[in-house]
Amino acid sequence: MTRRSWILSGVSAALLPRQMMAAAATLPKLPYAFDALEPHIDARTMEIHYAKHHQAYVDNLNKALAGYPQVAAHPVEHLVGDLNMVPEPIRMAVRNNGGGHMNHSLFWQILGKPKGGPKGKLAAAITKSFGSQAAFEEKLKAAGLGQFGSGWVWVTAKDASTIQIETSPNQDSPWMKGITPVLGIDVWEHAYYLKYQNRRADYLTAVLQVINWDFVTARHEKLV
Ligand SMILES: [Fe+2]
Image (cartoon, rainbow, N blue to C red):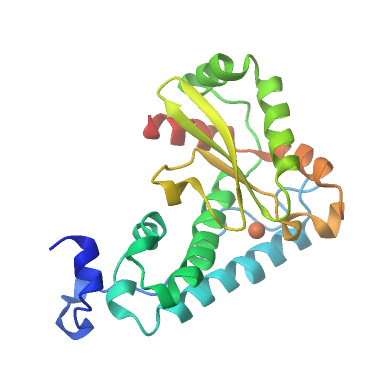
């Protein structure tokens, strides 16, 4: 039985082996203090973004899945990666809240006190694809500014030596197209409004000061 037919068959949760029952989604631990990214990202924004917004995505995902134990048995990345297998009544809730949970879980990891720029294959891919780190960052900023309304700007690996920039609305992501992103930057107003108000360009400049390129370099290495 395929994963999809298994889910759609409505197998009773009572028949599932205990180890196949997924625990409810939980908020991952933030890998640094709320004030660690000051002055670029202020502590109050970090606290509200993590403890309120991300928590709400987790809570609402669990609420949506509560009546669907056979769906909840799957890791969220399976559900977000194949939304057609999620029953229609909860598909939009899983898309928005499962997407929000995955996107933010990655976002916290790609931020941190920088210890230098990209290295290895990622540095080479940036040079090949954009000419220079500065040109790459300008394109990232322009893409983030160009995303109308709430959304994300992403970097994905086109192949082992080429990267590309793309954007998505709301909590959509490359995962929904079966592609694991190298990095993602939140451009929802909740990510910057307290400090930067409407100045998304200033936020994008600031957030690029606190990218943990060691983490992103290692992630890219694993993906390609
Ligand atoms: Fe966010």
